[in-house]
Image 1 (cartoon, rainbow, N blue to C red):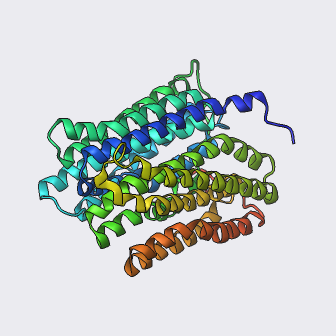
Image 2: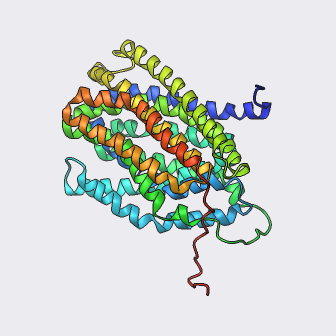
Image 3: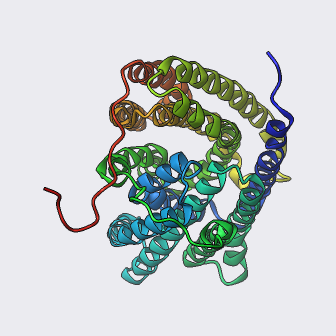
Length: 433
């Protein structure tokens, strides 16, 4: 089989550079966090971090997926940008309600601290959604160097901003929340700035029908994303609830680090392969077999690479205690393999979800995604009830579950005839007759 074209290989340079810098920031943040933040404080901050993606993964999920799927092929990107931005703004009241409710359920804190947390969550979640939609557009149009700049800015501010602000100004949780909100602001501003050639195109832009289709604006992707967000966040909440904030801090540090290592490889693979996956779906509408084969190759290649990286981290971590890792966090090493393996399971499901979108099987995502989330989350809840070791064992076994379950359901959907594309929603305020 011939290798990829030179231009195709060159696309990997900014992708790998961005993820390499992100990896370096993640490794450095292990040392920074373990030396500056007590485990219980890091555990509470980890709960905050688990809620922040509620904007990207739930309220604005359909918008982000629409941009990633259709931005590159759109002949009217300025118009599409206005539509997506307006839809983002329309959903902000719902985001405010959800972040306020999440703040109320956070453990500890006075009423004043809860209000501050709610404000920080809302600001961070809304800005993070905007920034990630901008990155989805940059990746869809293969503007990888511009996306690299946004990713690097985000990695630096996320890894170092919150803990350094915490240490410099008095050591309160509110400073960690503020630091993360500033990170989200930098990410959103950088993403919008890097998209300025698209929304500042010279000359008149021809008007056209709305590009944002009903299926992406409707409840389907909100429901699916809520299930995905729950799957990604459930273990931090279970560990904090059953085993305490200190154990949650251990999981946030090393389980999170393992998740970063494994998800970073998935990001490289998907960012490189997703444009071609969607193009294949556009060229061969209704033909599921080529997409199914490509998804299997991506999923298997990712799982093998991520498992190798996870094994390397697991083997190296004990040697880092006392130098990079504060000895107070030595018990956190227990969560490396479970945290990384569970991320592999989630990202494998993401690959098959993207394949369903490429094959115009959006409606099939409900059965595939919700079944996967129900099984993974149910296993985690049962494992937490039975004990820490059982929970860790289920998390480690989770990649096998997604390979057997998610892959089977996705392939069944891909081999069915594709439905007609959904129409754009009518925003005229009138009905035809």
